[in-house]
Length: 202
Image (tube, rainbow, N blue to C red):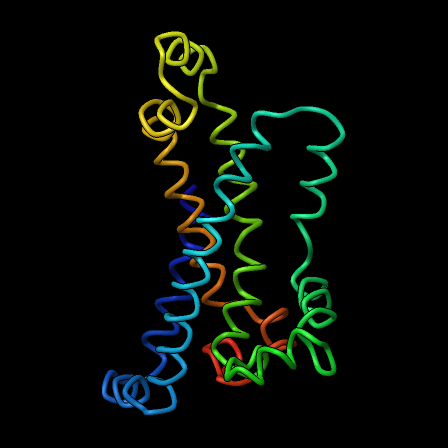
């Protein structure tokens, strides 16, 4: 454990002390750095929110079904970032009908913050789905059944029984997705090179 901690901490400390503090502050306040950091934080926040809104219901459903359908859906959810970018380009890339319609209505789907969010939410959702699915599976089904037997609806049971038991794991999945998106490169660079984010600027 100590070696792993050193593996994380030592490179970070080396980076921080590689330059005098005045130079680091000057670089961090550079307009280009501030702009890319703002874009990264904004895009990651919106994408993580969308990933959670759509990913958590899917994760709960996957945790409660069995069989080939579950395996098939999970396989579609977990795609490499480069593949995700290629898939998105076939839908919203150049010369696609959806991109033309959106652009005509003042909503560019590529080369914009919208494109960043589209790509990042596509990448974020697997982190939410896979992690939250394992968390939901860990919730004792007998507690949910007891709630339903006492007259609670499925939705009420989710919010009053399942969610309180799973919220720590859900928070971890959302945090993991957000952290991953701050450094996302593959899918977003294919869909939206601009506006630049931290990973692209680096």
